Every structure is written in structure tokens, then in C-alpha cells.
Length: 208
Image (cartoon, rainbow, N blue to C red; front, side, top):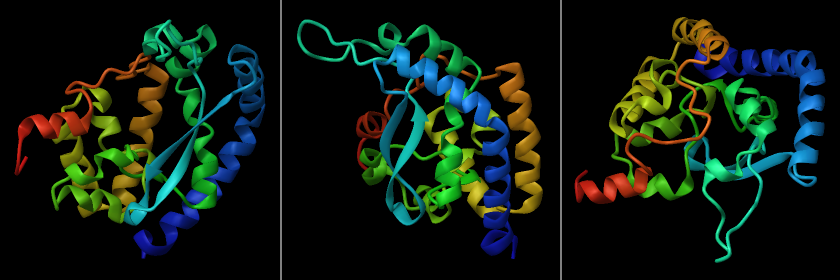
């Protein structure tokens, strides 16, 4: 009953209340990022959600669009603005995803939505991560986040799907709050332990 009804109800109520309470912060960050990013405070990117349905995730845009002489975007570390650094360090870049939760693309808690290019590289068991709505936070995020290997991260996602319950979600919430306040496992400049997932699986070869 929780998985099929109360979880979604909880998502809607909590997200609306949280967004209202955080609206002053949302407005202030939007203004500063609008200035820092030449009028572009938000970042939209396609991600696969429940049943692999593609949606657009909303985040605060923490990097500018500066390019080198060759026309390619500069490295993340060079495009990260001062405001963006603060926003990432404090996890404020996740606030806009409350809108994704309210409209039903995401849940507050679930496997983090990754890139569409990764879809062909999941094992059958790992594909179960898309049988539920992706989350703003999740079991993998409170157990290592980007410090985990891809295999460990996906195993934790599948564990969550198999054990989805109010008790597990209630366990993840305080862990998430603690991690945000203590800034634990937060990489301001993203650096995945094993690189991109598709490259990682290609290097592992057939059968993964």
C-alpha cells in the first residue's frame, strides 16, 4: 500500500511544503545564478525515469558555457562559477527537482536518474532501478554517493527497489539531512570513481 499510494501522496505533500518554505532561497539563488550565467539560472537535461520514460530533470545551473579556442566546452572545474560552487557545496542545486517530484517525474527517494546513454549497459537485474520513480536522494546517495564504484552504486539501487518500504525511506531521510548539513560525500566538481558508466561497461566487455 505504501509503495503504490502513500509514497506518492507523501511526495506531493512534502515537496509542496518544502518548496514553499524554500521559496525565498529559491528566488535568491535564481537571481544570483541569472547574473552569473548570463540569464540562464536553470539546467535541463534528459533522464530516464520510471519504466525508462524520458523526462527533463531541473537543476540550478552551476557552470557557465565558456568554450575554448576549439569551440569545445572548457573542463567543469573551469566553468564552475563562484556562486555555483557555493550552490553545489550546500546542495542547493537540488531544490528545483522538487518541481520534478510535484509533477510526478521523480520521487523524493529512489535511485538517482542517470543518463539515457547508459540504458543499453544495465544488466537485467540493474534495470529494476527503473521500475520505480527516480529520487532526489536515495539509498546509494546516503551510502557513499560518488565515492562508490558503479557496480556498488547500482547494487544499492536494486537493493532499494527490492526493499522499498516506509521504514527504509524513513531511514534515508535523516541520513540525507545529516549528509547535507555535514557536506559529507559532496564532490563540488563531479568526478566519478570509475568514469562514465557506458565507458566503464564497454571496458568490462560482453556480459559485464
